[in-house]
Length: 380
Image (cartoon, rainbow, N blue to C red):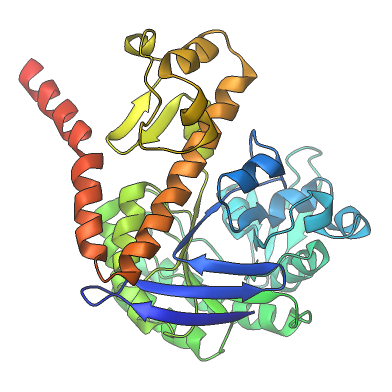
């Protein structure tokens, strides 16, 4: 894997780059739609391709439990198994494992129960990497301890040092270096000195890329901005920077401004299944009764298949009738909306106008939320 930094914005830390992988190149900043089990609810690979996706994310934990990395390898690897020819990033499963209610954390790894069979399973850094190497993803994430929020500093420091040690074990287990890249994950909770310490220790390992983890766990946008602001400047300038699990359009814009190159989140597809769609004027919930006779597209400025062919009223009808197509058309729109926003962000950085773009985008996007909040205040 090779990363080329093409340009830096003159008024912020925003960056334009190209990430070359064994399954093609990725233009950054980029958003990665999430296909947790090797499938993106509820879209086919062809539909995902048509949204403009350059890379998708799948999850090691879930694929290990079902169908198992051995079967995926026999099928020819994850790309062939799911009929996706472009790059794939696999998360190590650390976030999912540490989110489980019943687990036993040791200095070497984690014991947890199989969510379907109840069987005890053990996962450690070497095993997480071996699973990902059998899956055959282009980018593998290191196995880390995802620190909960809030967390006291004593435990946060112990956990952060464990994550650094585990990263070295991941690096030792990483053998497919020609075709698979390994990213380290910077932890440290909401403590500036721990974030900086972790970033500095990890950059010594000279990995292909680095991620900021332990965010999007309830800390809020202001604290998220602080964590990214503390961490990103201490990561290598010539390596891609990935902010895990983020998020909403405003989160992405704030983080691009602070030098982040890669993002992922389930929000576009998860919101789509609950009838919440993104537009340039903010989010709308098409299942609400006021859209029953609204014959405009979801977003008149959007070029996706949904907006070019269907109205808000039709989507309202589909959700009311519990039709599967409701989630399909909504997901097509939401994922396209995110990826179109990323295309516009890249163009704005190339033109040295990112800050102006961000300001204009948020002025329109957040306007409806401010109006809603204002009307609620007046109604009290």
